[in-house]
Length: 608
Image (cartoon, rainbow, N blue to C red):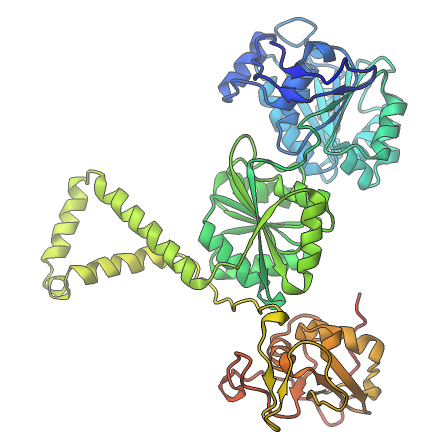
């Protein structure tokens, strides 16, 4: 059944897929492959699978660009079936490999091995993996025992080729999976060395989310008369992923993560951070709060990463905190929520992170947590990725508790509607007959049940309302002079702000060039809201705009991380009309005591 339409007859070397009229069944495949697909619930081909099985692609080299989560692993597994099986129902006895699959990461390579193993199991296929971090001697023994398909990472596969552990003489197909990612990771030399070692008459299939200049050059050099398949009309956005964004104060990122996990309560969730240190910190905090959590980052060994993924698949863990090492190649079908605890570095990373959910026809949510100081950057990122996000506040503790009550009520109704066995009824009758419970009444019994059901749940976090835009603030009245001062716009000459001081001065290398960025980050203010700065030998005094003084003081007291030990205090009473609690009602901050003989404190680190 033809499933493709063309704007014009496809030119040589390019096949552009524009529309899918109807799904394609797997009727033309070997019976063993059809049985494997049916057992896994595949009734019809996905768009990328239909594209590579179209008669126009038979025997041709292919350059395929398709979005993540579109089923491309099974697609190239089926695309190379004709070369591997040669019209037979089963593969020949295992010997020198017939196909090589090159993937950028260990996780993706091992996942590809799993997928191709079930696909070719009924056909007698043997799939071997060669990846960094695993025992090379065990891999050599597996290769010597014979294999039909070898899946590996570029460095380890090149090493086995150079050591003659991997014999390329019988190769019929080479597949480069996530080719753009392999170039980004600096594997160009390894890929070229692998392709140079393989027979010239091989069939070469390249799969890539995007086709940048480097991929096009690689295809031109190592493919023959290749067809380019563009699946999805060039639109990278998942239609099965709902994008959301919420604005929070920078110090409330982790609280927002907690409330999002509690509100959505997904079967599996993935939380992305920018650095290994952030992963370790957030993983520890979530585990401490009662979430079943695993971590994934580049500093873990392969065994630790494999164990973490297995815990997610087995249900022993429900939250994975990861760096972008997990943004590609990890397939967890039950993953319903992706949280960007720290913004990705570029639009492609945003799409690949989000692509861990909304896979195989399931719906998913991609939630960005945006510090109010980076909202513009987040909007540009979404625009560049060509996705529309729904903006809203972070879930409040009240919203989480209301959702808990709704879920508990639904669970109680469901359990009550099921027929109870005699043992449960006997316990219930005994409880109702207990004079202590009879005196308390049915409401107290139900409340005790609710407390029991709510007890194992992690407590939600209190999150402050995001500060409004400056244009919405009323004027500020100076408490000393009763003079009205506009909250927006520059102050008039001679108009005083609120003065603060910090315990770092000239002797501690305080320098205005990096003091100003430090104060902006510490107090969540802009450069225009910092006025005069006076650097003295042992302290620094600086002026903050009146309308921003309470905000600056609140944020500076909640600082964590680098330079958090630097003490900042106001030098005069703060205004009380900015929606903040009076200073005497706020929890005091503990400070380190310094010895009178201690050396002068050094200034804050230069901003990166």
